[in-house]
Image (cartoon, rainbow, N blue to C red; front, side, top):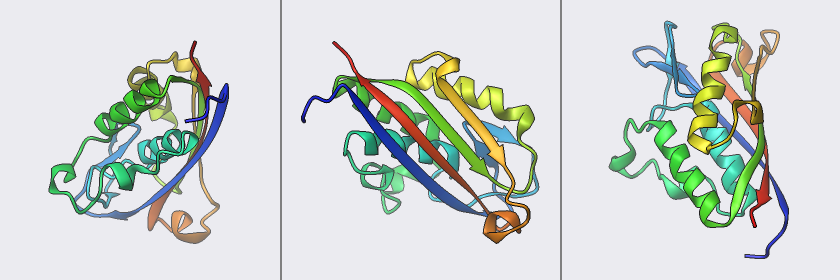
Length: 163
């Protein structure tokens, strides 16, 4: 891999909301009548973050590393998947400079859960919580996130080459 002092990545993920599933975002279980549908725990925030980190180093996406066709990842804890990604980043000689993520959903309100999400992400990535930004926004009842059909997340990251 070419040694570049800084690398930038972007990640995006979306999952459908459904009944009889837990809602887990940023590794935090959030009380709500619906949860996200997916092969793993469907943590859309951690999936977007993982994709941003992997993308920054041209290592593919989480589907490449954790295919939904592999029963080993059924119900997988996305914090563990993120830990694997963080190890890959370190193996390549990079460290997280910062992450900036946005969750798009109409409901539930996420403000009380943002700090615990940031703390989980920072711990797993081996950085200070100040290096992790998580925001949430509604989409004014527009589109699939606005009508409550699903939740999406975006993330951008900066990786820095370590000496």
